[in-house]
Length: 569
Figure (cartoon, rainbow, N blue to C red):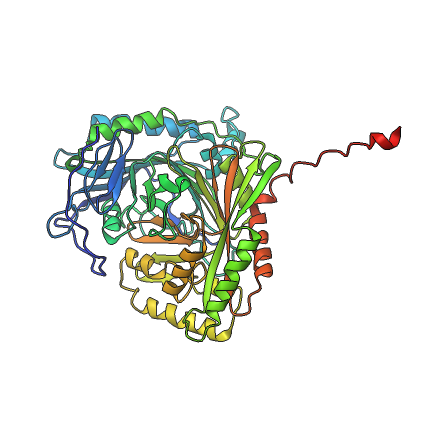
């Protein structure tokens, strides 16, 4: 059943963080002391989705929770609903195998259903988590007791591969660094109690299926959309996070392959596997809101449906794509059109009256293969290639899979601390010292006002960066719109997660859209500045695209030559 309610127009984005009318009840409890602690790793209307059934309500963002698809109601002052009343993390006793962890969670769901939150809690989000010890510690138990089976470390991407029938799904993995390089893994960090001790375990990557809450809409991502996400998050429960991505340019026309993603697409997974450096953690999240016709019983039923499909058998994944033949390889634009586009951009850059200093032009390459390419298997192969890159995967139901292996961080925010590599990404191709300095001053001026800003304001100020758009931004964006004849979608857009007191986004470059068939779209871009050569820039695109295509077999072999029979007689 779909119900639509007309609502007021959205207010403009503001740097002011609106406080909820009443504070939520927030609790992070420990049922046992076996919980690992996390620290930084070294190395217009909207729809709220709560699984399966759908209802619509008006808001600034599309959200969905277990069992309903809703639109959030906004009051006449433009302020959204208050933060959910209950935000809680429950850590259950550790389990020695994934199957036992699944049993523990199913029992906890049964207990939660029998003893629901107080009737006064009309909205909430609860995460329950079980740790599976690392393989070395577990196998020591096998020596003491042979009845204990030998196990291997569970990788998040292997777990996700085992759940290939469940959608939506997401995957995020941080960059790895050496022990002494002084850097931190910023995409997946945080802990359950804000402490840092030697016993803490680093969070490596997260794989999730189903949506406890899903946020998506066709309208551009706005401040109110972010507020809709924020109401389900709390600094007290940092592992409750919304993972997703935003289009590079929400004003551009949307092509059919990107329709299911909307202008933005974020999910708080129903079931997720958190891969730690020394162990793993299986977790479930349940969310409900009576005011949005998404009740606690609905949420429980939806979670049970998802859990009944979770596989506890996780095999070792071969991190290489099944070899296949490339039948065709078509570029948009082709080489001739690319040369004309770059030449036009250079003419504008070289015009004394034009403020444009740099523009980043991109290419879409449609690769058709003889066999299906599994996106998770392909992503696992990219992990081997990109040790110092973020890996990500995002797939809505009945839609292609967006995967990537990006080296570029957009920003990381924790407390009042902000770090970004937005400037570093602009310097790789050089250009000129004057250009570098001008971009640097522009970005530094943005940071001056961001320290005390909300996560949304940081995201809006930094995206798009000169590394994926150009400089100045508006002139570059306008030229991209005039020149490119394909939809970038979420390529070069922000990809990452929002947390209660922390967030991190990478730049969605080095990425591909894997369709449910025999074809895949691979995206690549390059910066055009004064002195650029169209042919050399084309070679740069070929090099970036080869990161994906080199994992596949080469083109279909040519047919053997037929002997000239006339000469043989």
